[in-house]
Amino acid sequence: MTIFGDVTQRLGGNTYVVDEQSHIEVNQEIARKTGTGKLLVRVCPAHVYSENEDGTIGVLFAACLECGTCLAVASPGALTWHYPNGGFGIAFREG
Image 1: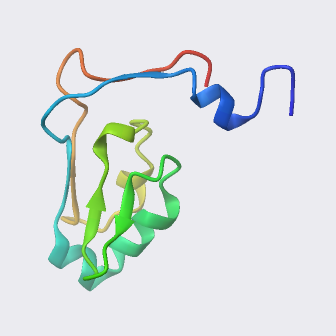
Image 2: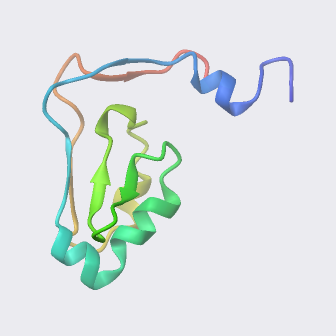
């Protein structure tokens, strides 16, 4: 740990203005067929994605860091993602 704190502490300084409408949508069929769903769960640094008991992928869009990691690994068509509407999303403070 440095004088700036660990990653969790630094990310804790961020603020979020959450929109009512998600900016992330998972095509469950493509995600399941291609394995993208399980990959999203593993690689997202904010733990936005989770696997439900029925195998579908849940999305906690309010926690999104808007980093684009999911877009880099998702199979074509598995993920629809755009930045949150103006005025919404994350505001980085120290992280």
